[in-house]
Amino acid sequence: MTERLYYKDQYIKEFEAEVVSCTEGKNGFEVILDKTAFFPEGGGQPGDRGFIGEAKVIDTVEKDDEIIHICDAAVSGRVNCTLDFDLRFSNMQQHSGEHVFSGVLHSMLGYDNVGFHMGESCMTVDFNGVVTADQLAEIERLSNEAVYRNIPVESIYPTAEELENYDYRSKKEIKGQVRLTKIGDVDLCACCGTHVAMTGEIGPIKAVSMMNYKSGVRITLQVGRKAFADYCEKNASVYAISALLCAKTEEVAEAVEKLQMRLKDADFRYQALKKELFAEKIKAVSGERYCMFDDGASADDARILADMLADKVGIAAVFSGNDDEGYKYAVVSRENDVREIGKAINASLNGRGGGKPNMIQGSVVSKRSTVEEFWNNL
Ligand SMILES: [Zn+2]
Image (cartoon, rainbow, N blue to C red; front, top):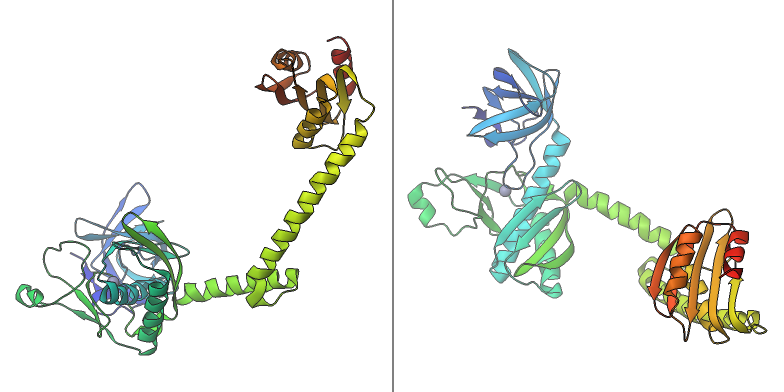
């Protein structure tokens, strides 16, 4: 069985090893080494990447207690191995940050971490109980305090007897030797992942969102380098919005609210003015049927205009658009069923659409002259 170097020292970036086997698999060459510092995917932590000799390690997985390095080329003999340590260190920050956060939450509320996922851009943690916004703020504050205290992160391998006396968090029943990760008085948890040596290396811990999930909550965390990158992105975003709104950064939400209200007022006034304009347009119209063209109207406007027109004529039709892009249409009548007209429009004018007995809507791909000819012969 491969010797797991990451349990001796989680900071090994380079090592030499002997290739035990290399076989071609579905996703690449599956390489087994006599010893490795590559951590295989497990417990929510992604597998390590890097290089074995010249071959790129795309992923590291565990299968039947064996660590498999998925490589893009075949390797053999004695090889120099290098980890993508930026990725690994970020994973260590994430994982350790999750321990601190879950430990603090567990001490405060007694809930367990029942789901954990480390993604490319952030990490989610599920708990089996409801957390209020105030509690979350306090958990965040205490988690970051635990980072500032720079507490050692230790691994303990207790005997089965000793284990009975430990009160530790665990996601599932574990067979064989249990490895406990202890972070001072903050957390004690059974875990096989890789962690930083001191909590100071974790960096900031920030809960960016929380949603109800099953009978508890799902919390999205940003930790360490990822938290810093997230801060930079949001900071840039807030400053850009602040410049666009000519508002202080701490007042952008208020400024957007004001803008929304002004938009609502303006839209209300626009709708009223539009109806006045439409009324003016159809002032002189009368008769049994009438079809008008409006090149600027939206589908909604065509419907509103046709509806107003139906107060003056038996069957009202509005076509909006142009010969190049086709026309949107609306046909309205107070007394007649216009669905037959709709079918005729669709059949004769290369159109589509339909609706209720008194109102149909759709679009046609035809020239204005063709539409007019159709309407005159209706
Ligand atoms: Zn862990």
